[in-house]
Length: 284
Image (cartoon, rainbow, N blue to C red; front, side, top):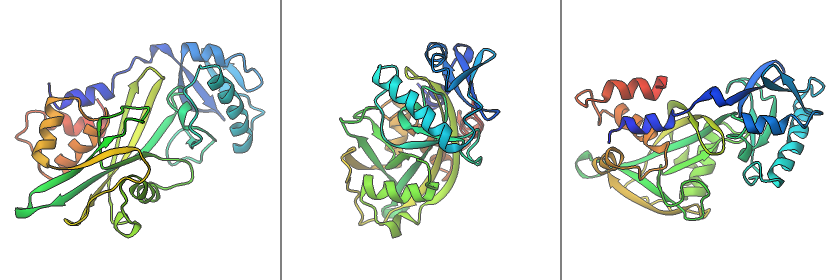
C-alpha cells in the first residue's frame, strides 16, 4: 500500500445518489435519496426544491429552524433511521465563517451531509539528539466509531459556540489530562478537508490541525474513558504504520502526514510527496 491510499479512502464518494438540502437560500447539506424520501413526509418542516429539499420558509430564524429540525431528528432517530443521538449540538451553515442557520445533533451531521468540523492535535516530544517522538492514542473499545484503532493524541468534533483553540483546550484536558496553560500553547497548523461517503451518509469534514510540543517529563493521562492507552512512538515508527497498514482511524493519517511534511520529515525525495502536498490541502 501507499501513503496516498489514506487520502483516497477519505475522498471516496459518489454524489449521484444524494439530494441537495437548502435553508434560507443556501446549500447546507447533501442527503442520501432514501433519507430524502423519508424527510418529505415532514411537510411542515421540509419542502421540495426541484430534485432536492429545503427548509420551509416560515422557519425564518435560528431558533425556529433548530426546534423544527430537532423534532424530525428525534422522530427519525427513534425509528432507527438515524444513529443514536449524542446530545451535542453542531452548527449548520454554508461555510465555516458564516453565521449558523440552525444547530443539529452531532449524530445527524453525516446523514444530512452537513459540513462538520473538528480539531486534531499532533502531540510530540523532542528526545535525545533532537529525535521527534509522537504521542499516539488508542481509541477505547467503547467508541462507536473505529474502536481500538490508533488516533491522534487529542481530537474531537467542534460543537457550536467554541472556537477551535477553545475546543483544543477542552479536549486536551478531557482526553489527555493536559492542563490549560500547556494546551494553550498549541500552534494552529491549517485545515484539511475531505468528502467521504459512509454507511451513515456523507462526511464533509474539515479538520483544524494543531501541533503541541510536550515537555519530556509529561505523560498524557485519559480522563473521559475514551482513550485506552497512549504510546510515545519514534516518528519513523509512526510513518511505517501509516505506510504499511490501516491501523489508524481513517482521517488521522492525513493529519500526521501533513505534520511530517511541515516538519521536513517527509520530504520531496518521497515519491508521493507532490501528490500528498496537493491532496492534503487541495483535495483529490
